[in-house]
Image 1 (cartoon, rainbow, N blue to C red):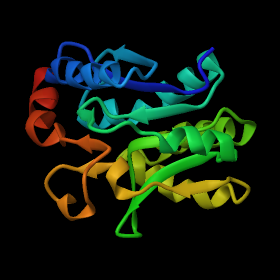
Image 2 (image 1 turned 135 degrees about the vertical axis):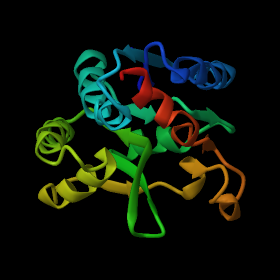
Image 3 (image 1 turned 90 degrees about the vertical axis):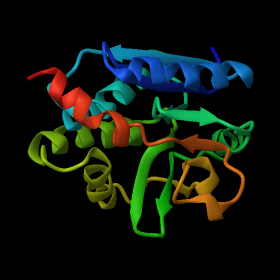
Image 4 (image 1 turned 180 degrees about the horizontal axis):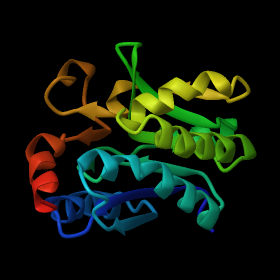
Length: 191
């Protein structure tokens, strides 16, 4: 069993299915163990993104080891060695807080622990209540309920948005914001 697995997912029969091949290529380039999930279209782009919490929950239960979640429109640009250090330090949860205000869920580290399993279950339940809110905002909203979490703020280079975070330095994990290109196509596909 690897001590850390990278996970992601894409929506079947959408442009994200092709987009994900670039992520897989870079995971393989750096010899990072990974599992990529395919889901059916949930009805629209927002519902598809909200499925992220269920994908993470499923991966944690199945793999029973720390995971790094990465959106399918990302590429690994440098060896992400920091995650191995987080495992060694016993960190529960790591993400980047953009400008100190906005939790970015495109790259997240989650240890396999009871507190993380509770966090994910709460996240899934809260998404049902706040179904019109982005999943990352829901996650940020519930975090204060888990003061026992050992949290690490990832450097911006680990969740670097390609065009508006260039000032952060050379990206380790770079996100290409495919939603800007594909969101309406995914929503339209179901009409």
